[in-house]
Figure (cartoon, rainbow, N blue to C red):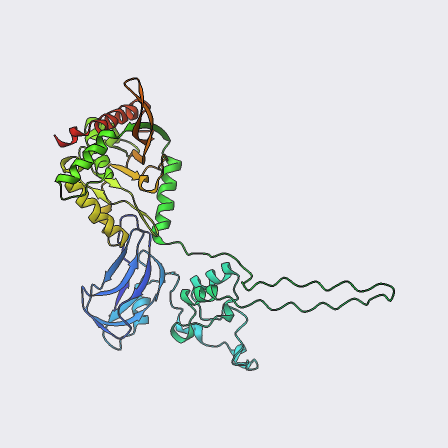
Length: 429
């Protein structure tokens, strides 16, 4: 019997996958291990490989979200009954783009007896239209009559991209009918006509963007973190004069362009080694003290935020950290990070200094118990040896999970972190 292909779990936090596109068409021969589609997960766009040889008999979901284990395709020998395979698998995937059974397309007796409709007139009931549930939902939210949309899918089926096209090019609003002029009184001249307001745009002035799998996961995980873990915040000023001088010297002798963010990662790793309580995780019935130091580095991408992990950060040189951060950040922006490259973090750093942000607070990234928010370096007057001088100052804020970390513990970590960056030669020994 033909094999039913289901949506696999491609990451530990994935609940559904969004089919971006198919690389194979129905009727094509495919081999086991061959990439057949691209799937957007909560973390990246990944390739879906076939696990069987055969002919791609049926694509159940052309594009759109599909829950884990939902049917997406059927592979078998040419001419096999793919509907029987789906029935035998006992699977109605309930996904947004699932094909309706063929029996639903047959006209009812009452419909055949009704007078024939004009070919150009769309059906008035969108339940009888060939449209995916996602397309119907999007059209309803956008206030668009789905019966006016021309479908581009199989047999004229209306899919997501058809609704998006209609949203981008709404029909022009009909011109208002001129109001009948009131009869003028003989003794009083009629008032001048009011010129109606004219605007070339559509009736709605907004845009609804479907939520990506990544954004869904960010909302869920950070919502759980913020409202489950009791956050408290500790902020400290760090004099970066010596760090600025060290970076300048490193640029002269090292082929790697070591950044301030690299110095922050290395300093955090060194401070975590001295304060293992910060490098811990809340497990519900236990607190796990992590002996290895794996630092997550938040990277902004168009769809949200990804956190690649620098593993064993305390064992790596500044040049090695620089090279790894650049490599992983590039993969993150290309949405090519693998799940293994975003797992295992024990502490996270979020740096917005490159955007000129002086101070902010960050939400803890589970399973960590702390996250460090790093601001920009600002030149400001400071008192040094009794004199007012210009100093390079940087604010950092530590968000702590009070179930694991107490105020004094977090403060001691920040003091050590401050001491290291204010005398960064310690990072080289």
